[in-house]
Amino acid sequence: MVIEIDLITACLRRERKAEYELYHISYAYLMSICFRYVNSREEAKEMLNIGFLRILNNLEKYKPEIPFKTWARKVMINVLIDEYRKEKKHHEVIEYIEEYHDTQEYSELNEALVRMNVDQIHALITKLPPVSQKVFNLYAVDGYSHKEIAEMLDMAEGTSKWHINFSRNKLKEMMQKIISPLHKVV
Image 1 (cartoon, rainbow, N blue to C red):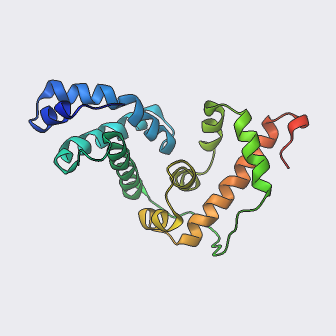
Image 2 (spheres, rainbow, N blue to C red):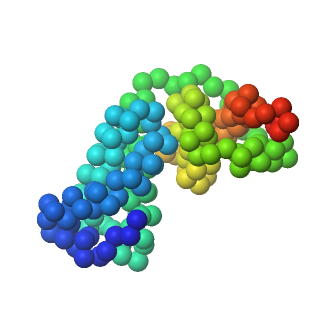
């Protein structure tokens, strides 16, 4: 996704044609981000439109030295997290684990991931409980730290770590059912 500075300038002047062109260019990229956080196409479209409106309304804050794609991604993720907070009606009952360390057993899981295509992996991630899915996406896909996730989702760092541990175990379990016995994940 390459966005020319002239297009951004035209959007800042509120030229509708330029805004439509920016929407058209960024649609697929922003929609792919939305799909990582919501499970239905309708909800993803709704989130994309809310996010794009926020991008347009905050375009004057964009700094050209930062790639537009990076800036737009951050805005979109913030919108998704804000919407999640608004709709959060109840907290999941969870166990707090303050200490969690990665182990070697996940290297086999990574090998299994290499043999799967993106759609298969996405399908498995969408089967995780909603909060675990959001934490997993923020941590594993978008690269946020447990501290950042805890702040965004209003939870303890240990809770974020618990969700990652839970998600990994659940994904590992689901993959074991998919991968042939010859390539069984340990």
